[in-house]
Length: 94
Image 1 (cartoon, rainbow, N blue to C red):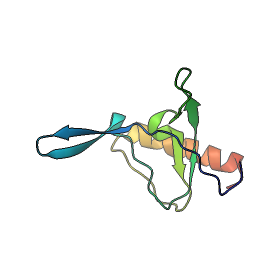
Image 2 (cartoon, helix red, strand yellow):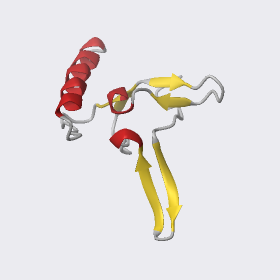
Image 3 (cartoon, rainbow, N blue to C red):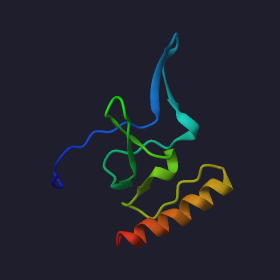
């Protein structure tokens, strides 16, 4: 796969229709990937559907296009993600 290829995968985000309109639901306060940014994303393949999904929700993606931190409001999760992000970026030389 070259750098210009499109690879589709699913995020733990969905829409439901309510009387007041569509409402976005994020599983476990997942932070949806933003268009135009670069990420390292860990994926898992569903054994039956063959579709790929973001593995481990917020610990399964790391924004590369900036040094900004995404805070979930959970100090333990934030600390784990920052430590893991440093490890991942170091491993891949980014």
